[in-house]
Length: 492
Ligand SMILES: [Zn+2]
Image (cartoon, rainbow, N blue to C red; front, side):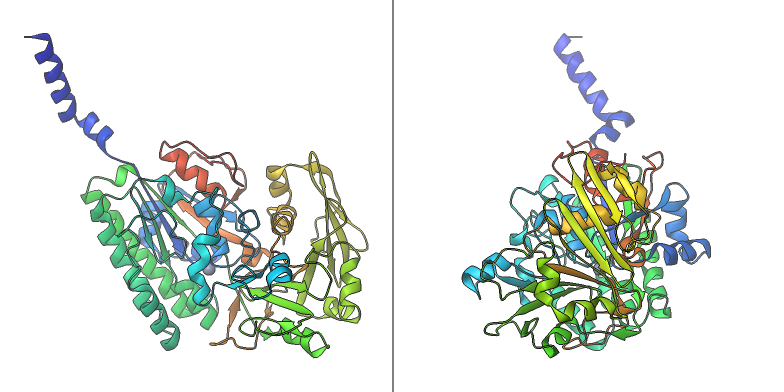
């Protein structure tokens, strides 16, 4: 046989060999973002046999673990860790609503002065992500999106629900019926599998929406979990039929937990009634406001003091002074869990009715020092901790990842002078909120911060995980280079 012929034959043979067919296949990463899914509810439903497909296809051959989300633990900003590997503060999107104090001081009502992604300004979300922070959609060749607002890098035609989203969401919001949205998510996911996907980010909003309307364990919420399970069953069956399942990483996770809300405390009206003219959504076109309140997930709020001469953030004791008589009253409110703000130099102050503490940034890491009390219940943590050590030291506490989360939030120039975190059972927004929220999230409490992290793989690093770790994990698992300049590290 001629040498060329033989090499041609070998090539042809290798193309037909089962091993090479395998090599020709492209790995697929599929992320099920079950918005608002709580790890404990998910665990109970898996154990009770209510989620048989998730159990059989993901948990039994793979892993069920928990991870920390970010502060504020709220939809939108809390999708950023998965899709950019960064905390919301790193991306300069510190909440679902924010004000940029410096921009507001300079220009008042300019486009970059304030934002609410709950309304028409949601369209700015992609442009607000800094250009130098690529999304997973920009790093995969054939990415697809279903219902996420982060679509930067999604090619034309690959945002599978782009045309139906606003209509479906509006109808669901008005009728309090979210099944059609979850069903559409599943249908588009099934259709997306026919388009040779490499990466799919699919949002199922039913668990979150029904939790807000009821409570996190309401029958309608559990039905929404069961629908996700039905979807997983259908999707895995189809991937097996297509011969792609063995090369699929299926991750099922959430952006935040949720807790039942028994009472609302309107933080903006609280300041307003005490003589501080307050700018808040939707009433943002006020002249000469003294303060602004921007609420996220309803259990977290940024407070901006606006009557200073410059747009600079207040630090240290400037803040209690600026809020004057309101300060003590705010701390003593039963709805307020704690407040946090920038200290002098590289430090952060935490205050609650149960006392004050300080977080200090040293060159070697973060430390935590109770002063007149221990608002996070962590005790003295005097040895500087790196990102991973600071997570490990707080992972099982009531405030998981508190040190790193406070720092990332205030690293952001758009974060408030003060961040207010509500106690579990309460939230911080009542006026202009329809329908009434019967569940909330957004706070730094573990009820809102812990999310399930399920995947059909084993043997990954068992250290405490953050949702920011998912980004580099997905890249590494797919054989792509990981990015160093993020807030997470690969788990695989
Ligand atoms: Zn959410």
